[in-house]
Amino acid sequence: MIERERERGRPRPLAARLGFGTLGRASIAAKLVLGYGLLGTVSIVVVSAVFYTGTIGVLDDNLDGKIVMQSERLLGHAGMPGHGALVEEVRRQLTDGIDTDREIFQLIAADGVPLAGNLDVVPAGAARGAREGGGSEMITTAVRRAGHERPARLYLRPMADGGLLIVGRDLSEQHAVREVIWRALLAGAGVSLLLTVAGALLFRHGIEGRLGQIRRTAAQIEAGNLSHRIPVSGGDEFALLNRDINRMLDRIELLMEGIRHVSNAIAHDLRTPLSRIRGRLDDALRHEVTVARLSGAAHDAIDDIDDLIRLFERLLQIAEAESGMRARLFERLDLGRVVADIGEMYEAIAEDGGIALTVDAPASLFVDGDRNLLASAVASLLDNAIKYAGPGATIRMRAGLHQGQASIAIHDNGPGIPDEERDKVTQRFYRLDKSRHLPGNGLGLAIVSATATSHGGALALENGAPGLVARILLPLAPA
Image (cartoon, rainbow, N blue to C red):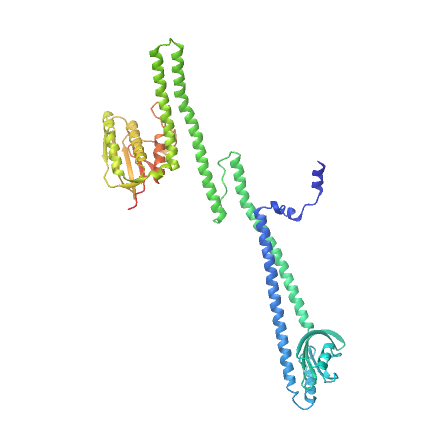
C-alpha cells in the first residue's frame, strides 16, 4: 500500500503525460506519431542545413570571386616602373565613393612598409607573407580599420618585387546576413516542429478514434451483444476494414442464431422420439414380460432409433456439403441425365399419390459436381413437392438454362410457401407445419441449399402462381 502511494506521488514521465505511456507499452498510434515526428524533425534539420550551407556558400563564393577579380585589375597597374601607378589606383579606389566603407586595400613594400591602404594595422600574417614571399592566399581574420576592429576576408597577392597587395572586404554585413538567415531558419524550424508535433498528435487522435470504435464494438460483442456494429464513414482503408468486420459479424450473428435455432430444434425433435422409446420400454417392463411384448417394444425402439440416426446423418450431410470436403470428388456430369434418372425413379410414387409428373431433361447440360449430392438434392425437392402438393396436383420437373446458368426447376401447383416464410424454410429444422404433424424434420431444403452452395450455385424459391418453383442454379462446366 505504501509503495502504491509512493507511485502516485511520483511525477509521471512526459511521454506518459502526453498519452504515449512508456516506450515498451506505447500503442501503435503513439509509435507512429513518435516515428513521423522524429522523421519530420530530421527532415527539417537536413533541409535547413542544406539551405543554410547553400545560401552562405554562394555568398562566400561570390565574395571571393569579386576580391580576386579586383586584385587582378589592380595588379594590371603594377607592370609600370615603380609602385606609383598602383599606389594611385589604390588611393583612387578608396576615394571613389563606391563601397569605400566595405572595401579593404593595402599595398606593402618588400621591406614591409605600408605604401597605401585603409588598414590601421597590417595583419601579422600578411606582413610575414610579404617577408617570406609565399604564394597567394585567401584568409578570414580580424582587421583594424578606422579605429574599429572588424572581421574581414582578405586576399594576399605577392608581387614580383617582393611586395604584397592585400584586397579584401569587410564581413560585418556578411555576418549580419548570416545572422538573419540563421534566425529565420531557427524560427522556421521551430514553427515546422510545432506543426509536425501538432499534426502527429492529430494523426494519433484520429487513429485512436477509429481504432477505438473497433475496440468498443469488440467489447460489446464480447459482452454478448452480437447486434452491435462498427460505424462506417468515408471510403478510406479504415472504412473498408470496418465494412469487412461488419460483414464478418453479420455472418457470425447469423451462424450463432442458426446454432441457437438448431439446438432448440434438436432438443425438440429428440425429446419426442426419446420419450416415446422410453415410454414403450417402460410399458413393456411394467406389464407381464412376454417374448412377444418385448419383441414388439424392441422393434418399435429400433425404428425410432433409426429415425434419430437418419436425422444425424442428414445433419452430417449438411455439414459435409458446407465444408466443401467433397469438392475433390467433383466430375463433369450431364445434369439432364441426373434429372431424368430421378424423374423415372419417382414416377411410380407420383402415380400412386394421384399426381401428374412430367419430366423435361434435355441432354448435354454439363456441370462439374458430385452426382450423388446433386441427385439427393433433386430427389429431396421432388419428394417435398409430392408431399405438400397433395393428390390431384401437377408437378413439372425441367433441366435447362436460366440466366446463363444450369437450372433444375421443379414446379408444382400446390399451396406453395407464403412470401414471408420463403427465406426461412432453408434454415435447419424450420418447418411450415408448426405442430409437426407431417413427417419430416425440416432439414430437406437446408441440405439442398447447402449442396447448391457447395457447387458454387444457389437454391431459389419462387412463387409459381399457383404453387411453388424450387430452382437449383449451378455454374456451367467450362467448354
